[in-house]
Length: 565
Image (tube, rainbow, N blue to C red):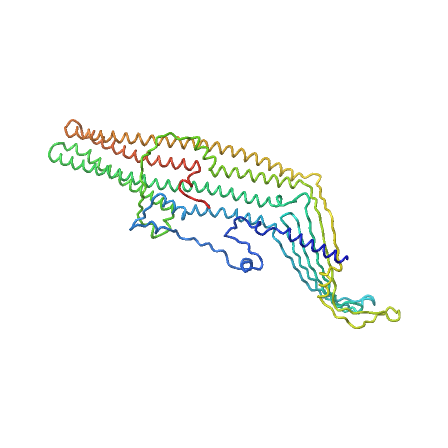
């Protein structure tokens, strides 16, 4: 009857242990880093990782997808295709993507407290010693002791600490009075400690995992914020090339006009219509136009080099020398309606990744507060243990002869390790124990300080979040104002260009009639060039201000069709 009860107790304990095991599907981190896996025993990857001598290799892949946009002997890029190349090849983008992997590894690390471990040991001890009495059974007592122990331990998600151990020992001796020689003993031990107050329950034991997961989300918001800035810099480089290209076109047009006017002035000089002193001004005007064209060409070359750097075209020897053709054009704004600034502010509050990252810190603060509060609780736990022992080996029955105290051995009964195992798993000699443990600190200043720090940290992060909101509002209002200002600047530049064209035409007619001077005609030409350059500058500035508005509202990635996985 007692044996059946013991078996029932062990079966219930085993079933409880198996039921309390963490769910493998639930314990798998949401995203495991591809850089470092944690293989389990006895998979091949386990031995390859822990016993291999190879150092990790870092292979830098060459830039990709450039051939998709090579047309003839030129690299033809729209704004969308250029941004695709930036996201695929830009080194800063790849660095930001990899920075998130460390936080994924931190989640894997936080699961480490639930990882099981196995400990095993074996030793052999040979000992010889002189006998001091007759009952030691030999003049020189020789023993061979061979103990073996194996232990499995794991902390479960509920906080339960479980240990299962198995031990065996073989002892051989030349003692004439030994009744078992060799003596084989074995034992099975099952111990558990279940917290009843501190560290009790799945929630409090999963707080480190939740903190690591929250920090991963924050790192993703930080990555999005960095991608916004990288994308803005890349697009600014694109529009810088557009502006440099349009400026070169304007200066080349100015050079052509100056050349035609110089030819006309030289013809008039040959015909005697003007004096020799009047030819210097057209010549100087043409020379200045040549200087401006040369400067514009070098500025365009520098802008194109920066553009190649953004999309990593400088890393490809076959692409870095190709001429670049940008298909986007500078267009005047068509919408005159005032911007709804408050709507943009609300959009920024919803999408700005720096604000969402700061708000994510509040979640970490709440979890840290719960963790610190748990450490203030008394350490009260339920403990239990079950032990089953067994013995085996060659049995040597001994009898006392004529009551003289001298024993004699009868026939040997062979036995072995199997006998010890039968006793262990037959639960013939069990020991079981239940108990309670209480550790009640009368004062825990460290835990109280940690709890106070968690409260202070949440207050600080709340104030930082409010400060970011104020900064966002100011950034959005300024960006929207600049968009409206640059939109008005484009219109004024176009009006000025129209008047410059009319003035040049009028000054040309007056000069043909002889009622104006060459100085006034050249001045009208210079004013036209300035007006054309101002239209280009204001139009590109308008696109830059629109780009800045998309960034400060956090909508740039969605507006450019970029999906962050």
